[in-house]
Image (cartoon, rainbow, N blue to C red; front, top):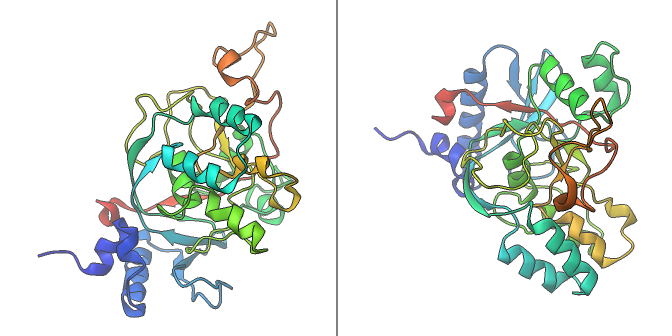
Length: 302
């Protein structure tokens, strides 16, 4: 006997967006039941959500709102189609060519990835929640990698994987730029995903270790470890302060950055870095945010 349509839609974003209101209600109830005590469905109107494909749920022990994001498959990394879209939107100059060439080596090879459905906070964690969830150990809303992971793990969650973040930034398989940010800025609209996720263009930490490219990268959406503990962050385009079209390169959904280059006890630089990251890596931690993810039980994703 085949699983019901609303269950199958968890792993197929196109099927998910076609679900009826009743099917969505049944799916939400099924997810909450599988997650166990402490979770409840939130009516979209009560969550101040104005997008039809948002399916919000609240984790009552932490009082955090999460949105369900369906899975699917997509091509991860800077594809030729992304570059073509960039050159259609942005005036192509020697400067933009140099920027793209600099990033190409860490954004490829492009590969097919299967994304498991997951729950994610619709916004990064604000400073009031940071103070509350950390019992006052952290006071701001920006972190180094260690602090961001510690906050997420202490709350019982984790940071997004790189795959999950790029899936969100593309809103499934739709955009070369994060939530179509170039068109949104020009139309004076706030970029927002159909699943109600905001702020993806801001710098934020991923759960993954840093890897200098996608050689031997896994084909699933789990965080990728066994790399450099400097970590990786994504985002970095302040849309309200864009002064030239060339800055939109930092809005590409595939873009990624290594955590800061760390000096060893004898002030020796990290082994991972150097020439291939010239102009990309920073010396100090970015003002990066934390966003929480909750993986779904295998009974829903298997």
